[in-house]
Amino acid sequence: MFHRKNKQQKKPQEMLDIDLMEEIGYYQKKPQKKGLDQKIVIALVLVVVVAACVLFSPLFSVKKIEVNGASQFTTSALCEKIGLSKGDNLLLFSKGRAEKTLEKSPYIASAKLSAKLPHTMRITIKERKARGYVPYMGSYLYIDEEGRVLEVAGSCRDALPLVKGLKFDSFTEGEILPVQNTDALAVILEISQLMEKYELLDEVVEIDVSKPKDIYAYVNQVQIHLGNMTNGDMKIQYMQQIVKKIPKEDRGILDLSGLDNPKANVTFQYLT
Image 1 (cartoon, rainbow, N blue to C red):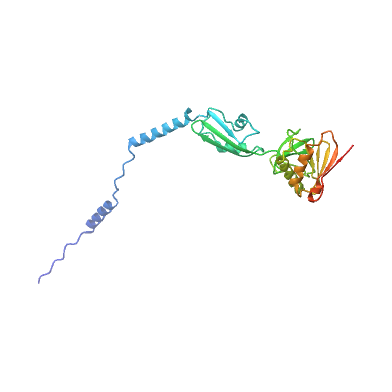
Image 2: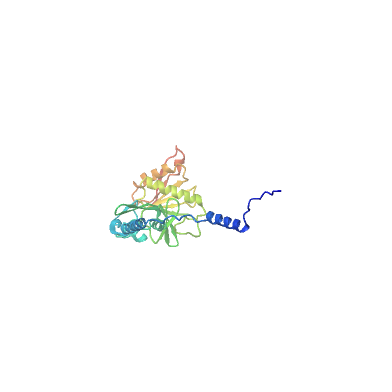
């Protein structure tokens, strides 16, 4: 009887060797990519060096400084505030920091610095202007059209309204005056703008707004009764026309309060 021989099976050790070789082949590291070409690296370094040399060279130095919008500040005063000098680098100068520095001044509402290649720095500012003076403990507070305190000084430099009747306990320079009678502040700011409109700022005018609905003004030796600010534009216009015709040595009372009524008359009473 014949027996059929089975195929020779692989020995366990041979199977282990084959599996190991397959694993080694599977995990064999892929060839690494080559690094950047040395010539490219050198070229990039040269570009950076050249750019730095151009940036820091006198090619972009400040040779001219232009100022726009300034009437209360000279160019030298503005440059001193921000530390800008001719010869400074036009591109590296900190424009943002300079703008913030300028805007700390109560007289400067906004500031903008811009570089005008190749050698010009342009400074553009928007100024605030004093619209009146408020007496305070022997000094004067300069206020703008919003009632912001621009300055504290011992005297009045320009012919602006001298304001009386505002009630406040304290103030901060650069901030709006914290008055208790806000209606009175609104009235004086309106009057100030009308006085500028009708060119009445060449006269020293004192305005009492203690009672915003019964306002008095004083020019030279003339007392002017304005009443309230109904038809305020017309009242200040009449005030401008009449006051300039009254000799400075004359004393009297000018009553404009009747202009609230179209049929009323303007009267002037001389005082001896």
